[in-house]
Structure formats: structure tokens, C-alpha cells
Length: 206
Image (cartoon, rainbow, N blue to C red; front, side, top):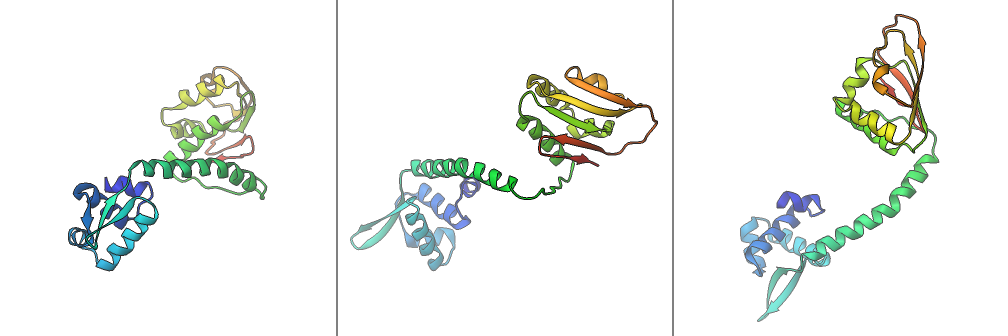
């Protein structure tokens, strides 16, 4: 549970103390200090943060302070608010970033490039055109790591046309099935890269 709490925004100390309060119920700070092994100042500071976030409340009994968790539903509420805010600002980020001069993004490793290719076809508007030159033979299909059909079927479903310039030794043109136009260059070339135009992106695979 500690790792999951950290993933949703708790610090390590917050997660540790919150978990102790879950397990022990209403507790004095001295018990929390004993179970965590943290310095008392760290415990009190962390409790104050949890109280501020409304995850924990302090109850006074006979002039002694006890701490307990509040309704856990607050965690869902807070993260839901963060998600709503993210949905609002992401379009603004995309809009503002598109106003800047073109930028180069480097994707290293087969998994990163495969994810880029699959994400790109998902984002590509329907009934548009993708263009590329000099398909790098096995390189392209190896990058997709067995998911070429997934990529190609989604392309066809969205009505996305491919236009390509291929070398005479290209053996993959038959796999595109439909919505595919190409011109052949009758040259025995060793191609190790290709150039693409995908909407506003111009990826090059090396």
C-alpha cells in the first residue's frame, strides 16, 4: 500500500504515517514516533501536512492529542480534482507548444519508438494522408514488434491513406492491403532509415 499511496501523491513519510493510522486507528504522536522511528519533529511536521490536506484530523481528549484518518473518499475527491484540472490545462499546453518553432524529440530504444508509432496513428485524424519515403524494410516492422497488423488495421479503419516511395527491393508493400499508393525506384539500395510526414510531425527512423 505504501507504494500506491506514494504514486497518488503522498510523500514517503506521509504514506508511512497514514498507513500506521490505518492499521492502528486513533493514535497518539508518541505511538507514531515509536512505530516509524522518525524524529518527533518530522512526525509532527508530517501530521500537520496530512491535516492540511484533510487526510488526517486531530482529536483532543483530556488535553492529549490523538490523530486519525478522515474519510478515505477525500483521496478520490482530491485526485479527481487534479484530473479535471489536467484535462483543462493539457489542451492549453498543446496549443502553446504548437505556437513555438519546431522542436526535435529523440526517442531512444525500440519500445519508445514502437509506442510513438502506435500513439501517432491513434492521434492521426480520420481520412487524412501519411507519407513516407524509402521504407527501411525489416527495421520498420521490427520496431512494431509484432504489432504491425494492429497499426495497419487501425489506419484502414480510420480511412488514413498511405503514400510512399519505395525501393525496388521492398518486400512489404503487399502487407498494407488497402488505402496505399506507392511509386517504385528501381534501384538496389541499402536503406537503413526512412523519412515520414505524419500531420505536423516529420519522424525519421534510423
